[in-house]
Length: 184
Image: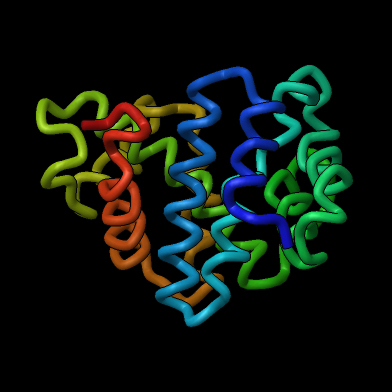
């Protein structure tokens, strides 16, 4: 398995957009926290989160290829269940269906980062004091962070977490790296 340092270099070399780097770091943090909570391999889950959008800059005009290109690039760097999860995180467009804990964790974990990030940006205190209750209100406001797929966030149930616990874990994970991702 690729080292974290090498994975981050690979990410930086393939991802010129700072906002996508921030999303990758947030996804890494959330996936690591989910793995810890579920008793899974934290390093593998974190690296899967970090590298899941490796191909985004190359596939943004061909969204049906998103995830497939990343998985191909990462075949020699990550275990097959990680590359499968990377393919499945874009199931709606590429047809690779999620069916494992890692598949669903990546899907809901990377998606919730958009909701949390947007919420932190509008709050005077940023990440500090953010609660699951405030995120649940944002989930109901369809105009807020409109591109965030609420149905995918609700897939946290597939990994045995209710929405409140999932939000608690995700908020805490991103709060730890807030300065790194522009959310202080």
